[in-house]
Image (cartoon, protein in one colour):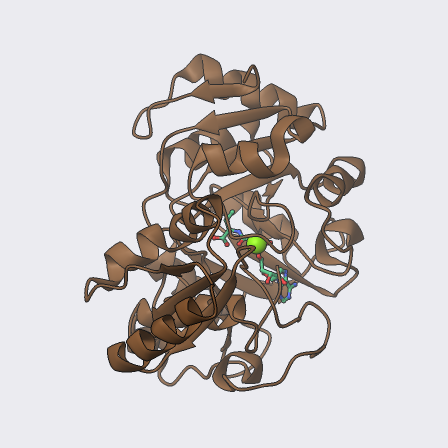
Length: 326
Ligand code: TXA
Ligand code: MG
């Protein structure tokens, strides 16, 4: 594709970065890798550019975006105030896969925050994302670069599949290192609340902050379908196939036989004990099982520890059992 440029994930070609930065400054859309998933970026302070993100993703306008930054000078004007807690958290976790929700400054357009008084902020460490932010010298609003409701993209091919020529340029740096999205931590509540479990574990946060509760939509894994406030819907991260979660290997085997006897094509998520590996491949496994045309994807849920909490959350969302929407 003519809008895909391959770059080295560690030291991206400055010319490619310059080209991408110009597109962003001019109000266009650039998909770029972060350490979690690929993002679909636009100039965060340009409402018209931000609207293009919603159009390309077919994302409902009530779902707010994360604003990406590369240094403190860039982030401070976006916030109403800088709290000691914010300083503590970012000194430990930035750059990295942690998004914080804080009260916004008037500078941040309503289009970015879906008219909320708060803004979600994140400083990624991926060298391509960092280089792009540096070259653009502007905050970049970027949701995951998938079509709304589809699994997040962990490879440039996934972005092409979902968004194709709706994006002006795709920086292809291969597969993203972590594979699940950033942890979203709400700093407007005390103690802070995890709105979305992600690549920074609850245990890592609690080592610094003491007990960090999960939002009820995350904690209550059996919530029935339907709306649960702005930004929340149940079914998400979903492949086209139906996802079913099983409590044990034994239950999975029985269910697989049962489905096959009904003439269904069954696919399995490879769930190993290596949770880092599973997180890394989760969304691409969804996509490749879809490409194989399976009817049902079966998996055993990992334990809710470390990265397991995020993986478990994504699996339950995909299965339509509880969740936040993106
Ligand atoms: O890893 C990631 O976070 C990736 C990369 C590209 O940075 N981005 C990502 O963005 O996953 P997205 O839009 O797919 O998910 C952002 C989540 C959504 O659930 C959204 O509702 C929530 O963050 N969010 C954004 N702004 C918020 C706010 N002001 N208050 C509460 N939640 C917010
Ligand atoms: Mg998303």
